[in-house]
Length: 125
Image 1 (tube, rainbow, N blue to C red):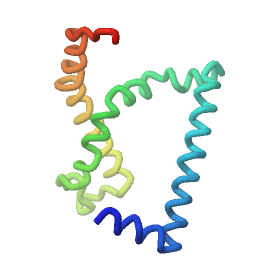
Image 2 (cartoon, helix red, strand yellow):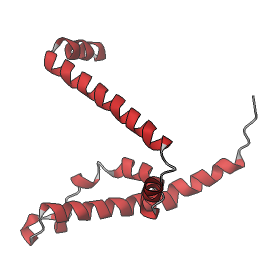
Image 3 (cartoon, rainbow, N blue to C red):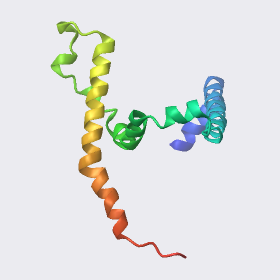
Image 4 (cartoon, rainbow, N blue to C red):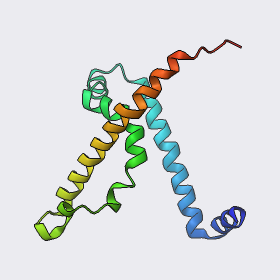
């Protein structure tokens, strides 16, 4: 089935263009990322990357990745437009809920599991 899908993607010019454009975007992003990591010694960039909020979001990023698809499917009553919340306000509230869930996940599951790795000794091969 996957082989047929791949064959279809490469026979259809519209999908070919999409695949090639995503490939070019990925390569360009990799080059930009490489240049950024080379220039971390620049003070403005270092101040941005040392921001405590960004470091915390990086710490809980796995939880953000795990739970980001679940939040839109739970339509809580305060997300309703009937009480006057606009789209931006409801998205902001969803983001805050996502940050809360990811933080809880970090402190209850991820952090204790990461502490366990110190109990295992890795032998050099």
